[in-house]
Structures are given as C-alpha cells and as structure tokens.
Image (cartoon, rainbow, N blue to C red; front, side):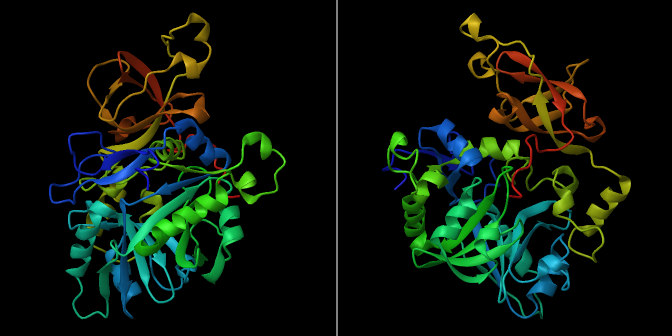
Amino acid sequence: MHDQAGALLLPYGPDSGGESTGPSPAQTAPEPINLVGTYGELELEYAAIRKGCLLVDLPNRAVLEVTGSDRLDFLNRMLTQELRPGKAWLEPFTSVGSFWLNRKGRIDADLRVLVLPDRILLECDAHAAQRAIDGLSSFIITEDVTLGDHSQTTHRLAMHGPTSLKLLEAVSAPVSGHAVGSLMPGQVTIIKLAEIEVIAERNDQTGEIGIDLICPTSGARAVYEFLLQKGFPHEHVHERAGSTDLSASIRLRPGGWHAFNIARIEGGTPLYYIDFGPSSLPAETGVIDNRVSFTKGCYLGQEVVARMHARGHSKRKLVALLADPTTPRSPSDPDDINDPYLAGMPQPVSGAQVLPLESDESVGVITSSTLSPMNAATAVCFAAIKNDLATPGTKFRVPAESELLIMTVQPALRTVPLRSRQ
C-alpha cells in the first residue's frame, strides 16, 4: 500500500548498502525492515505533528508477551525498573520504560512495559526482540512464566500530534481500561477500531501527544485505512474552512520516519540502535532516570549500574547540542541571509566528531541531528560526549558540510516546550 502511494521506503537495520535509519545491529540481527521515509511532503508531515496528527507505520517494532502467575515478580527481578506490586503505575492498564541488561550491565533491549490484567507486553526494537526473549527465558527455572514473541501476529502503528486523542475518542469503541479521550502518559487502554481490537498506549515522544497502537497483523491495514478515512481531510482547503467534518479539525496525514525523526530530536527522545545501543551502559543514554530504579532489589547487571551511580558519572553522556543561530551561512541569494530557512544552515551528520573550541582532539560523536523548525531552523543534535565536559552552556565545534558549527550543550535533551500534557 505504501509503495503504491509513492512513499519513499528506507531500510531500517543492518547496513544494506543504502541509507539506514540507524546504526547496524549485530550480524545476527534480522534482515533490514522497510520503513516509510516520507510521502514526499515532509514539511506538511512535520506540520501535522505540531498542529494536527501524523499517522506512522512502525514495522520495526516488536511485541513480546509475558504470561503466568509469577510474571510480575519475575520481571521485577530481571528488569531495571521497579515493578513491585503496590506501585500506583503498576496497576493494570499502565506502562513504563525499562532496560533489559546483560551481566556486564550493557543494554540488551530498551523496553516499554505494558501491564494488562492478564498479561504483560514488552514492546521493543524488532532487532532486539530475539535477544530479549533468549536472555529472559534463560532465567526461568521454576517460575510460572511463559514468554512469547508476538512480532509476527501483531503490528505497530503510532499517531503523533495534538489532535490524536480527539480522533481516537471520536472513532473508537471502548473495550476496557482508561477512557481514551483523557488518556495520560503512561496509561493504556483497549479499544475497537474498524471492529478490530487495538491496544493504545500514551507514549509522548515529540513534545506532543503520542499514541502507540498494537493491533493484530491481520487487521493492521484495515485499522490504518480506517484512521486515514476518518482523519484525513479529503475536501479542498477552501471548502473545509468552515467544515464541521471531523477530518477538518483532526488534520491527519500519513507520514514517515523523516518527520518523526525531526520531532523526536526536538522532543528529547533518544532511540535504541541510534543514540545508544547494545554496547551502552544505562548512565550513558540520557534516559536513565525514567528507565532505572535505584531503590529496588537485585536485577541482572545491577552491580555495574550501582557502581557507576555511586561514582557519580560514566565516561560519556548523551546530551543535546543546539547550534548558535548567528553561525555564518552561505545563502544563494544575499537577500536571504536573515531567513534561516532560506539561508540553509548546514546539518551535521551522524558520526561527526565533537571538538572543543581550543583543540582538534575529539571529545564525542554526533548520534542524531536535524534542522529544527521549532528552533528557527538551526541545527539540533544528540551527542555522546565525555561526561566531565557535558555541562550545560559548554560550547563545542561540530563539522557540518564544509563548515564548523558552534554548538552549545543544552540543560536537557528536549529543546522545545513540552505541550504533550494536554
């Protein structure tokens, strides 16, 4: 369907000789997965995230299922997050982020843990799914726990933008869980879309409302087309200026990786296999505070995590860098010099070195970058740099095309106002 619609498809995963959306996983990882890059209108797709709703297909995400009476206790002893019964967010229909580590404290999987009344779902990158299944299964001895990989029988979609919840509330039928119209971050509900049962999780990644959808693979296309039909404005712009049609207020567009990537960098959301990965320690990710509990009991890899926490820092840290907007530019027309969109600030590429102002000795590397519409089209990057240099306000030089941009460490990974609590 995407191909017939003229979408630009990109390979996600191991290097296949073309552009990849992220670093290559280990050689044992599955074959690359085709993602929609864009439908050819990137500016409109990005605008949908900020003003309407962007519908994204995510075949690069996997869903694991954990069942059995000991499932919560078992996962609490395995994962970095506190899953002890009695925590408010551990009630059924809640979700939380967590790491699954190996014995050396390295991250084998970055998980979303969805607690449902009769099971727990672990949502993760598709290339980390088998490693998570194999690792967790090896620790099941006498516990009543069963792990299953549902990646082939379930499919992942997502909606990002301020009108996402309004659309779901208008077109869905409730099954169980929280009311979809008032779904808050970290809450889960089950609804029906096009007569198909869908699990919806509030997971804000762009600074706007974000809804992750898990549906049966057999019904994925029907759900996707149903949301398009209900939310995409089909009439001409001048005709819908005063329209009462639902789509006129929702302003949904189908979109892809490129628009989401811009918005998630602005929103301060690093991704596994891109900004950190299997060789990373939790303290190096920039998201340790919402993945790791420092008050719970033992879990695999805890000694390494605790030792680094006691020491106060790791060797490197993920930070956000924002380019100085006064950086000299080279517009094709001198009259464009005051327009950042037309002047064309150069964009650093992933893998570019981070250099101090006073020397050419690299102190870090760019992991993700974009030209941020919410920051006057200046360059914004995630960078893994030496921890003792990761102080907000510190300036670095970063190669970008034929220039060296002056970029400053930001107080947080997010560089846009948080509007996602609406």
